[in-house]
Length: 230
Image 1: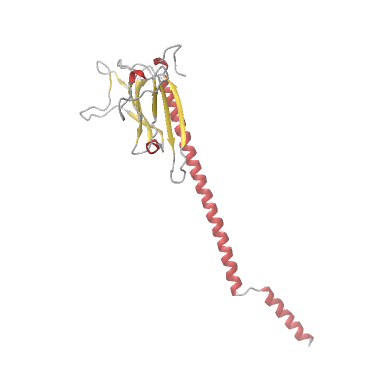
Image 2: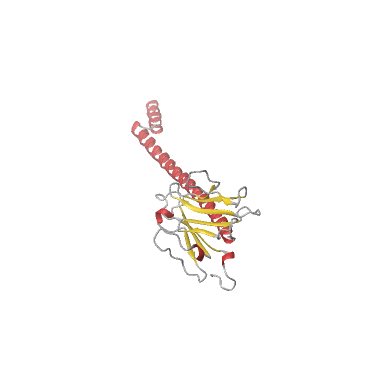
């Protein structure tokens, strides 16, 4: 009797130590769901971190570009061929003359929006002194190559979708210059203060709020002492 009780007791212990097939399936299912949840969570965290890094880099790159643009616009002066300091001033393109590379020559500088690539670019043309009179060799009507060297100032520029102008211009009285009609440039001779406004966004679907980069720059050589915009 005692022997039989002992055997039943041991069988009961063995039975309690094991799992049924249903219990095993339930445990595996729960474990799988937990692992899947953590995997999805960490993947989303990595994606968010990647997006934040990419957005931060794009913003930093654009801010540096705007700072350089401000520096160049501030010291605008007459061109090396005698041209007036400002050649063209509209909402997405600004052409002027300044010492771009800190040498003795004055370059033709063109800041413009590239709608196709969502980039804000700088085009620089050096003065060609091999001809008389010296000229800035820009794109000619006959299709000849231009001496303009174009570089990117900012990527992921979305001003074209926000419909906000990149450039806004003001005169000596700090009054905004209005073009004669929509899409046309303002009077280049009246420009003394320029506002630069860029909206940057790596992905407008994931991040609907654009990063705003704005700066005002006074063109020193075109202002009058004692009567400058504030």
